[in-house]
Length: 383
Image 1 (tube, rainbow, N blue to C red):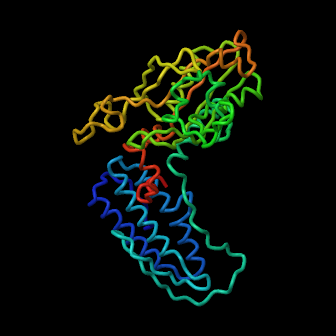
Image 2 (image 1 turned 30 degrees about the horizontal axis):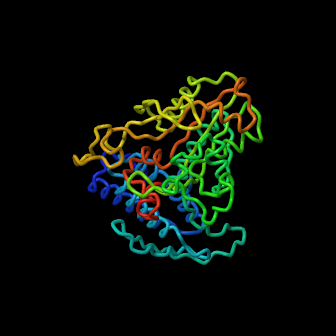
């Protein structure tokens, strides 16, 4: 009877060992039945096909279904199984001799050798494909965010990372003495003192300058979403990084109201988290929006209690039970004057969020620095 990948009812180490043992036994049994080139192709497709191969089913039924606390353990087992299956299936094109796999931890290698008469060289056979990597969790999350807004009819715009003071601050209604213009908060390019302030170069602190650039070249109605990399002079800790990613967006048209903003963001949050997450709107202030609001989501690391499972203070939400992930508001009429829009005829809203914070909430990660340490043990969990 052909092996079928079971749904796991338990993800304990003992249950995983038992499931892995059965899978490897089935792999060895089916590999022993390979007698010729046609048998090998069927064997290869059954175990490695992208749509319905055994490896694909393992990823769907074991890794994706595993609870958060077991994902690291299950991910390691799945990766080891992939290595063992791949090594077993690989063979010489002119024969059916399967190469041994290297030692791969708990699962181990599978050695199989089947003798057969050398087959004639078929130059129409496809070559050996190199294994492809997967998206980084931050990039994957950014694409998911953009996808939600694209489905709402938003277009995607991008802009330069090195910006001028005019686009980063002045055109967004930041006054000359605003704290954000200080080097303690913004990273300025060196030797810019001789230039007028509006022409000085800096690493953009948000993707909002693209809003100005877009409105300069487009007339209402406008619906734009803007993903990209930004920089701020923040010391790294569990929830801050000097380099991170943002997705901002805005809509401008006749008779746009704050209720439109709430409807769009509520829909977005339900789509991105795939559940009714706790959300709250708090009055706030941004120079380029009036009125403004901060949108908080209930901390999924501590469940809103302010403490983690061990009873220690939650480092991510700083014991508040909430995470600020989104800022929004109605575009200030002063901003429209910089781009030639008539604030008497049009109105609009704008919003912006940190991609890393969304990813932390989605995947239950408690330290933003894990995204940038290039630790394959961490990154492979998202492949």
